Length: 402
Image (cartoon, rainbow, N blue to C red; front, top):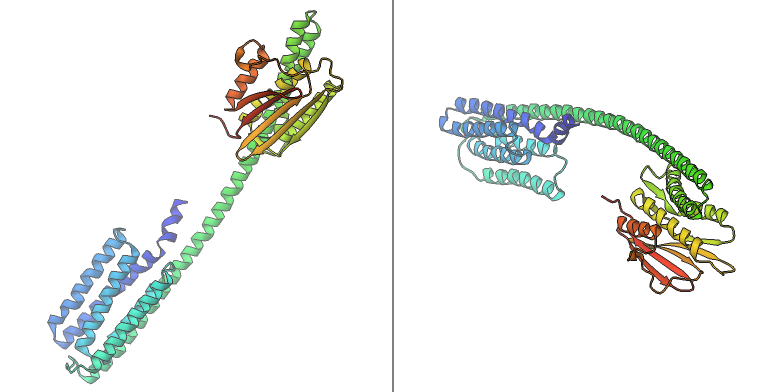
């Protein structure tokens, strides 16, 4: 894309280059008129002008001066030379024709401020009016006779027209090239966008396939744990395997949502995940009434997996310990957004927490240790309360983790 940048960006600079060259050619023409008038001291004007045009041209080609500054220098040179030559050859020689070229070149730059356009044109016409008024009161004799002045006037008109046509033709070709470049840029961008879209779709398909395979593998592990637990006579070991099975299934459910939902490879519709989780828990524990209230929330995978495991652990603990002697057991999950912060509540109407309950005590078993570790992993905060049963609140932010 870099090959297109300079021709489009430097359109005004490119158009100024032939203008400066034509300025040098014009000064050569004026030098011939001065030599014909036999007034060699006046040659200083076109010679100095040519030297400055040449210097500006070189610095512009080398990008050591901006196009706008080059134009200002060229405009000042044209204005000064017109004033000098009109003074010595008279108003009738029509050197002021060259001033009309300045607005023509000026308007090749499309990014002038409106006040700049107005000011420049006012200055050009101000010079014209000033010259006209000044020369009408001047008594300085012309270096040429009336017939020669008429010839010079015609030549100036013709040369002005030639320069104007040359500038217009050159700028037209430049604009045509620019438009062609823009079309090529658009074409290249469209091709690049199509390639990026194809690559993106391929990556999404690949990620979905990966998540699908991970889910299947986790389900195989879950099935193996289930088979192993059935062959154990020790209820404690069987319970440990079943808890591990629940954790594996919680992770598998996350990966299932990843390949089913159109959220991209690293995002999960966590409300939909909780809905599926509640349905499964209702099937496993039909006597318990599960409730869900959740705002729409798309979670990054780094947050969704640990948070899903936290919910699974809290629900498992409630099912195991909360509902002794409770006739109508209930578990509710609530997910709310508070600014850029989120709160996940898991509540039950069971027996509540013991007075000395503390996740960090290390005496509550592996499940509690897992909850603490996962809460730290998502930079979250866990709080718990006794209010008509046990209530747990996880506060977190939806951000990718390093």
